[in-house]
Length: 294
Image 1 (cartoon, rainbow, N blue to C red):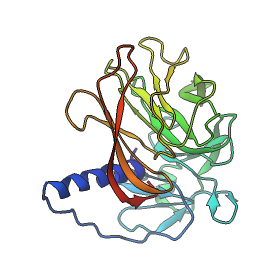
Image 2 (image 1 turned 60 degrees about the horizontal axis):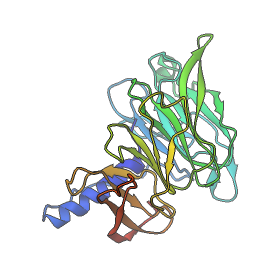
Image 3 (image 1 turned 90 degrees about the vertical axis):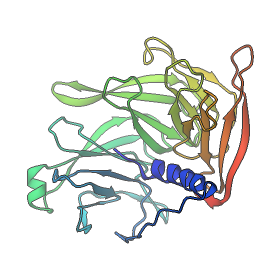
């Protein structure tokens, strides 16, 4: 499961590093697939032919033909938006074929579309059945993540909401009566915000959640059976998805790489020596101010 947002941020930063060290820029050839209002895409081997395919909006694109194959309908809202903010390819029902998990911007319901498998590979007209994965109970879910946060080999579902008052929730995949279902864990009853990432902030070996209003510290034991401690150590206004955690200066502490989600600027927050009480300390740095919409 790959995200273009993750790759774009990473390549943007690595490209800047290459420029600093005098290395040549990599060359890419742009190929128009389809003109549509979409805000999500995913990459994976949908038809099990060994090649990576694309899914975006109402279509998926088979490698190497790249012709749009419609497999679902998406509800529009407003003049320029579709109810599709976060796509992931994941085998939801365990039949060996990648399905599509789709979040919806202003709706609380998360959908999944069932890959028809061999029938779909034989004919592009075979429909994908729409299912409800769960109802989060909250709207304004602008971005979703699938992330294996507990290291058990199965990813958890996490929604990033631009509504700062929304809770921070994690959903685990499970099965009931042989069918896929989701179980909810509450990280915090209130406290979300535009932008999110994952990584070990305080060096305790456990992956934390970073977001616009600071970071949530993962408990050492039973992480999904209790709330996480919210550290309001920094604010990242309208931050990107994802926020990347990486030890850029090799001082043993993870730093933050983030972009302005709806304006110009790519930045990094250098993590300094923490205070005696454990409070993290950060120094803001500008990487580039000519890049927008990260």
